[in-house]
Length: 485
Ligand code: UDX
Image 1 (cartoon, rainbow, N blue to C red):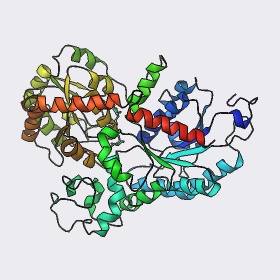
Image 2 (image 1 turned 120 degrees about the vertical axis):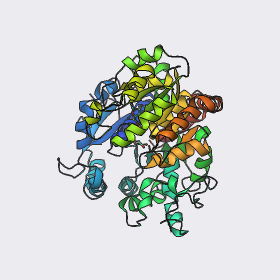
Image 3 (image 1 turned 60 degrees about the vertical axis):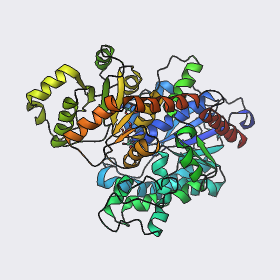
Image 4 (image 1 turned 60 degrees about the horizontal axis):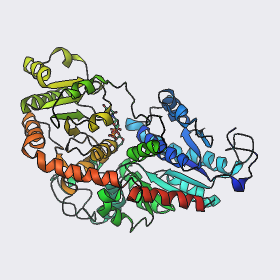
């Protein structure tokens, strides 16, 4: 039985309702938090939209991972959209509208009607953890008097820009007055010395105040500060400067990342043989590990642009020539859907085929965490998805950044200018620039970058052991949740 009926409500552990943003990345990260909270003895109801539930549960090991926690259950709720709605691209914002109008009343009903119990009995929710972008969850929680925490799984540097959107608009910096993307941005406290227009999230380039992204994100500051606290996937030693700015708006922040490593540590502490939950949507090609085993330490640049980013055939060729001309060894992930069309495969220039045979290895999907931890890998050319950055920081590898969209434009600037962990290639795609950056990262400035990366990696590891910042913040979160019972 899900809940032990012999125990009365008082002696039961606190019961936390977790509601992630129904998108794959946030759901994955939030599952990691849920697992950590289960290890701390809390009962969890994890709320998924029916759509995400159907897509996710069918090809992940979530159900078997959580079998060992009798106090864990998954419940579903409708996102209010028809089954065949794409929920992405130009229709993406319809998801938010529907959640707000259709899901909100269902969510409220669920919390007030006792629908949550699996044994037919009512089980009180002691607190809610919901994605901060789902502001309606705060309305409901405040209305019925249940404490609520917000969680945001994107990069805090991008979240901070969202917080600052009202000031950017008020100061007249946004929308931009002309086309000069190198113009400095002054209304983002903590980043005044290095932020440029081109480093803002890509949707800012439309210059349209009515843009649905602007409309959605410009209320983040107010929305997140309505919750009791804000949970973030970062650590003090990486984002301390920004976090102290953010605390002026949201005083109670719990930076508990890097979440992937936090959970891995917990699993090994518990001598748990369960492998960490996989982020993989595609089948991993493990043969690249054998290839890496035969390379020299720090000699390989790993290249991957995550699960969504795509490139044109022309961009593919520029990247490929740049890599081959750099004469560095490379392991490259080209997903089946990375490049539009298939015909490039039949037209690979001889010099690229030969250069790749000699020094490169291409796979459709890699076991990324294992690759980044491999001693032969000396750098990562990444699209700067937040998970990729945290995984790279943890393993102490420097980065070349080729951001694709959203938070990645911000993250890449922070990698280069705030953390000094690599080079930002944004807005260019030219074989000579690729060649130069790869050589700079892997040869010319190798020692400098590796030293910085090693230093940050030490902080990332230290913050997760007893007494470390993320470890302590997580303990504080659990204690605060328990205090609400
Ligand atoms: C998206 C957005 O792009 C990103 O900006 C946002 O911060 C989170 O959601 P995605 O593009 O997939 O995610 O990038 P990222 O956050 O880096 O996540 C990719 C995940 O896939 C990582 O955990 C990485 O380890 C994994 N991966 C990637 C593999 O396991 N193998 C690969 O070959 C490539």
